[in-house]
Length: 610
Image 1 (cartoon, rainbow, N blue to C red):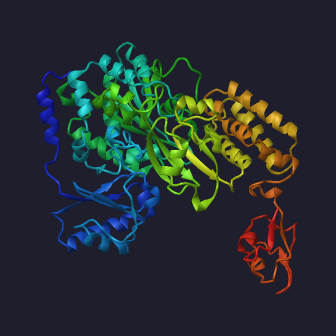
Image 2: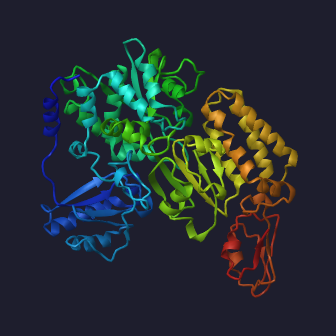
Image 3: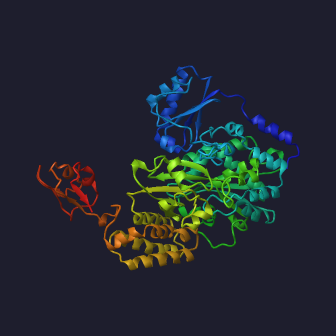
């Protein structure tokens, strides 16, 4: 530890830039914002600010994603008194926004700022979000170290190196109750304690940024919007266990996150926040990047370690656990991005503060990626124990196009589908497991009345089949047989005995698969069977798909409302509809590909779908 605390504080303060403009224009330049067209918006803002000669009075901040993906491109104008966010901004809107800087008002579409609440203790009852992990995302420029420092950046590392022993750090994280946010929910402090107790020598800190769940983008947003928080956390963890090397295993498909991580690592090294003799404490820690090749199974820690070693990304039996024998046979900690992002806040605020948030067995907050049939697609961070209803209908704005809610899939392809009677469930690790789902990394896909739950189960299982490493028979062969049975059900070729076989095989796979991917892969099947068995029975007994999704079970026919407008025939991609103008038409069932174009095109409700 450093003896001279005053010297350390002087070092940190010297790194901060003094002074900033009273008014800031925050432009969301995360992947979602850029994809929605934020780059030309940014250039137009710069141009208009220059033309208005407001350069000294206004600071333009290029941020990461604040979570309002549904509102991108977004521009926020804020000062010490007020803030307003303009949503779905077009280039033509920028001039008007700049002209109204003085009173922060405009006739352009805006989003009420109920999306960002960083202070838990100030969180009112009607303000559901409370941000720890996303505390800086969307608020700072992730490519400027001084922005991070102004928001208490590296203060936690400074506290650790001046006031705490490695044992103190492990104890603080253990007492906080922080559980791994990558899906398993294993206590982080316990894991760190295992590695810390190993004999001194080479040890490793690994950040698992190989995010691959369908609809999940939490880790990407953190790395794009607040990369220094992860670097600081890894350094704290390395100090706690006695490691000097860190590796961030990140998907090659995340180019913006990679770019900003490289910038952040260089900045930290240049200012002696990483590298040799950090803060003059004698503590050395370096971080390097390792690119993944997009294999979902490499999210499993032993498969990830093998990939770093240059081997095939396949899991192995545990024990020994990586904390005892991991990378190159050395003690290794593997935590995901969200887990690390909690660490600096816990060190600054203390274990007691963190435990005051969330539930007794699952303290803190959880970031969820809301996707699917929901109005407000984006990222939310809520205290553990928040209900599904609050997340989907309050923060998410409810179901798109006024449709009925049908189900929500939590935990990605390893999770389960929950129906409406679970909407008031306060979610945490144990609660979700008890009702047949799981937390996973935080993907949350919302479905409406138009979704077929048998087809949804088949979709997730199809993903698992593609991503399985194929090492163990239950996952490789068992899931193939499950998928085949689901296909027969969707085609109306199954019997009720198929459901019995489906369930028995699903439980056999859960009990015998090698790793978490295989053990949890039947969850979508089992949860849809438990909650939507009537849909399975309709496919089997009635040879029909209630949602009208499974094409082999759909028939389109023309009824007597047909006026012969020929609109259906003109839109049919395979020309299977015949009939003269002003006469009733006919669909050739042998040629029909069940695409539904005719059903959608008809303005007279003259086509039945059965």
